[in-house]
Amino acid sequence: MKETLKDMVKSAVISIGMAMAIFCLIGVVFDIGYKGNFSLDNYRFTKMVIGCVLVGLGFGVPTIVYQKENLPMPVRVLIHMGIGCVVYTIVAYAVGWMGGSATIVQGIIFALIQLAVAFIIWFLFMRYYRAEAKRINDKIQAMK
Image (cartoon, rainbow, N blue to C red; front, side, top):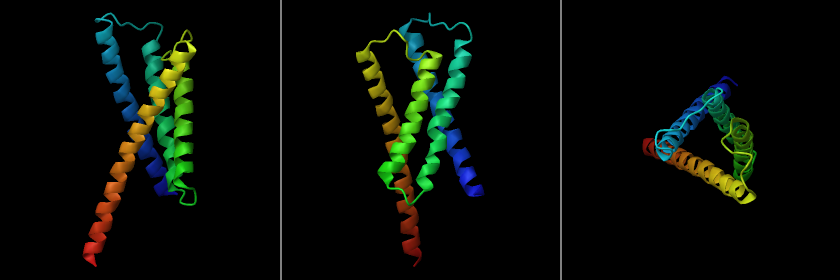
């Protein structure tokens, strides 16, 4: 139980860090796009930072599902990404990342971009952990 909590906290911290990094990069893109006239009022920046933390938690905490060996991997991915993407979508509307004036086509494009980014990050982590497991297995085999 203690190890599970430790893994969950580690995943949450990593996810919050990634959410903050992506937020900062997108902020720079918007600042450049608006030629230095990108401004936020009524605590919008603070709300967005809190939203980043929530998104990080939304993607980080559900990673605990990967410790459930009795669930098939596609189900684990669906649970993890489903929770993360739902949290992201709610937060995105709440803090103004997705405007209410977006058309249906813009909303669909935004959702597809969101899913693509989430799955790219997931895929990179999956490759990293599989390579790490292979290295560990190779070392174990070499010790025999």
